[in-house]
Figure (tube, rainbow, N blue to C red):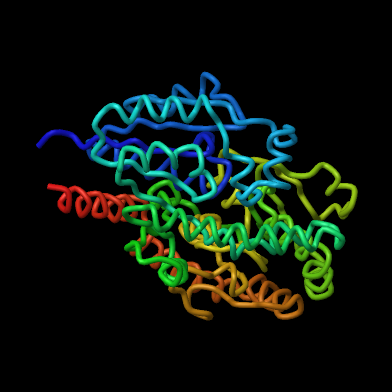
Length: 402
C-alpha cells in the first residue's frame, strides 16, 4: 500500500508543547508519522518557528509550512470583530490572504486526508474547500460557543450586548463549519454528544492522551506536603483556577495544615501574581520542561477548574505520574474516573481544602488513589491508543472514497 498523505492544518505551532492543545497535536503527529503517515503541517502562528522548533517538527514531518498571524490589535482584526459576521476568535485567525493562497496551491496536489483543527481557524480555508469540493476532517477540541463565559467574564458590563452578539455569531459559525465537514472529531464523548445536536455530520471521538512511558518511573513525595497546579495561563479557566486556589482554598488548607506548600507552574505566568500572593509557602515555577522532575517533588496534584471543556491533559499527566488528584466536576470532565477510586471530588473551597488535607495526612489513601488513577490512564489514555483512534477515522474516510 502507498503511504497515506495528510495535510494537517493548525492555528498554532505544536512545539514547544506549552498547552494541552499543543501537547495533543505534537503527540498525535509524531505517533502517526511513526506509523508511516506522510504529514505536511500548515500552520498560522502568532510566534515564528525558531530553529529548535523546526528541528523538532521536521524530524518526523514531510514538510512544515508556517505563516505569521496578524497581531491581536491589528486594525483589520478589530474591525472584523466589531462589525463582521465572524465571532471574535475567528476574526483573530481569519482573513489571511497569503495563507489562503498557499492552501490553494497545496490543494493542487492529491491528499488522502485534509484535517483542520478548530472551527475558529476555518475561515481562510472555506472558499477553496467549497470550490474544489475537497472532503476534510474538522477536529473540535471544545465546543467553543459553550466556553464563552471563561473569556467574556473579563469584559466590562457595558460590553454585555457585544458578548451576547458574539456568542450568537459563534454558534452560527459552528453550525456552518460542522455542516461543511466530512467528519468531525471530538475529544470527549460529552463534547461529541453536544456537537451531534448541532449537525448531521458524523462525529467521532479521539481521546486526549499522555506519554505513559515518560511518567512510568515517577513517584510523588508525600513528605514534601506540596500541592502542584500546572496550566497554560493564556487560557482564562487556568487563571480562574489559580485565583480560586490562592484566594479561597489555600487559606482554608493552611488552617488545617500550616506546613503545606503550593507550587504553581506553567506557561505565560503573570508576573504580578507573586506580588498579589506573597506567601513564602507559594512557589512560582513558571514553564518547566522537566515535568516528571517537578512531579517527583510534589505530594498532591490539584485542578480547581470551574470553566473549560474537553479532558484536561494536565490531569492525565498527573495521574500517569502517580500523583493523587483532587479536582472539580469540571476538572474530571471527559474522563471515566470515580470519586474515591481514582481521585477526590470537590466543587467548593471548603470541601476542596478538606480533601487535600485528608490526602496529606493519610499517605496510604493517597497512594491507593494514585495507583487506581495510573492504571486508568495506562489502560485508556496512552497517546498510542489516541493515534490508533484517529487512524481508524482516516481508514473509514479512505474506505468510503474508494
